Amino acid sequence: MNIVILAAGKGKRMHSDLPKVLHPLAGRPLLAHVIDTARSLSPSRLVVVVGHGAQQVRTAVAADDVAFAEQTEQLGTGHAVMQALPLLDPAQPTLVLYGDVPLTTPAALAGLVAAAGAERFGILTVEMSDPTGYGRIVRDAAGSIVRIVEQKDASEAERAIGEINTGIIVCPTGHLQRWLATLGNDNAQGEYYLTDTVARAAADGVEIVSAQPAALWETLGVNSKVQLAELERIHQRNLAQRLLEAGVTLLDPARIDVRGELSCGRDVVIDVGCVFEGRVHLGDGVQVGAHCVIRDSVVDAGARLQPFCHLEGAHVGPAGRIGPYARLRPGAELGEDVHIGNFVEVKNSRIAAHSKANHLAYVGDATVGSRVNIGAGTITCNYDGVNKHRTVIEDDVFIGSDTQLVAPVTIRRGATIGAGTTLTKEAPADKLTLSRAKQMTLDAWQRPVKLPKP
Ligand code: UD1
Ligand code: CA
Image 1 (cartoon, rainbow, N blue to C red):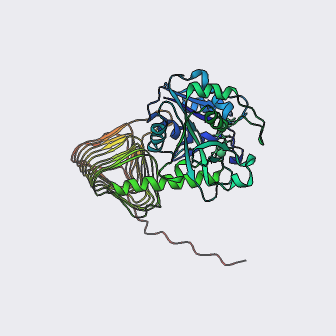
Image 2: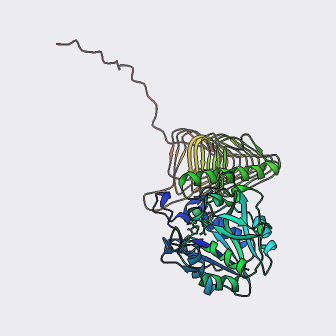
Image 3: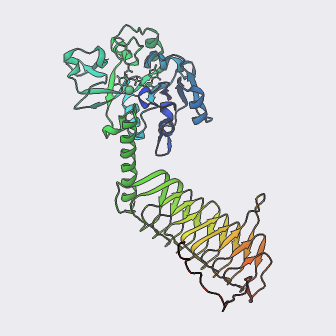
């Protein structure tokens, strides 16, 4: 089968410089969703018709299996499909999709394609209580489809028809080629209508069949930010439904956003307001507190993220305790039962099992052993303004509060670092190391008193 995706339109009502089909839904361009759906049908040719912002659109969705046809002037949907014809296999039927209709399911398309077979003309239609704006499906007394009439060209009686053209059609390519060549633009919009091929099919005695999607939202398109926001909610509701069906507990399925792939083990609990981006895996029994943002990360079984954590490119080991208000940046690799508390930032650092940094710390470019305690206000000074250096903290180290570890520096196993230390040299194993000005008390000192006004 050939698939043609129409994506040349400008999207004036988006009021945006970004081509309409590149506006993101669940973090990815609308057109990328349509291309994914198209791929699920394993087409032999996949052609995207580009026009407005052609170069930008090509770059955004470029792939080995995607070909592009350019429609320099938007003269109508029929004209758009015509631009793709030279790239199609005439021996296979052609399915036409829209780059701004992102939520059609593979099942709906497969149903349409199966109904049409190799010889029939297939149209995906739906019944609408308010069909305003859409092309209406006109049937004869026997119930056979004979043509499609656009809203602007329709008579009063035709406008009363509730069955509409979703725009998605499938048709034998040889016929399509012939019919498109005969199209005129003598209509209310002065456009070459793809929908006019339906009447041509009827005249040629080609059978026209219809199929319906399981849900109306599958056929909704995006023409404005309002519609984009509506489809985003529908999509997120569907994703939440899938998570619930797979056994994930969502404290409110209306308050989760998944912009990528979220996979979950058993007995995962997700509180409200969380955002998942890229590829995220949550192991068995993981609990995610309210308002966490997690991107491209893995959280192992039994770990618990308290509210307001931000994770990116991080790995939380089994039974970890993270947050509230923790930030794990790329390369944060935490072992089993590691505790990262409030206002602690970890970047490009490996922290081994049972170690803790519970309050107000920065751990960057560090290798931290097991059972290490990193006190409040500890900072790895990893950056000298030019280069980054590593800090090595071996097993069973205890670091007192408000300590600066000036990298490159190593703390040997079992060492204790006194509070307030600025560590610039290696700290030996099992000893107390500290750098601290001696405490003193001035007995003769007195508080100043306020002078009387002159
Ligand atoms: C079209 C159908 C209408 C159907 C409706 C469903 C025609 C003539 N009408 O109307 O029956 O009910 O979709 O939404 O087909 N495009 C191009 N190049 C063009 C024109 C359009 O690529 O020259 C693309 C647009 O970017 C859009 C899609 O084709 O993605 C549909 O075009 P649009 O102008 O929105 O068609 P409608 O008037 O809504
Ligand atoms: Ca439209």
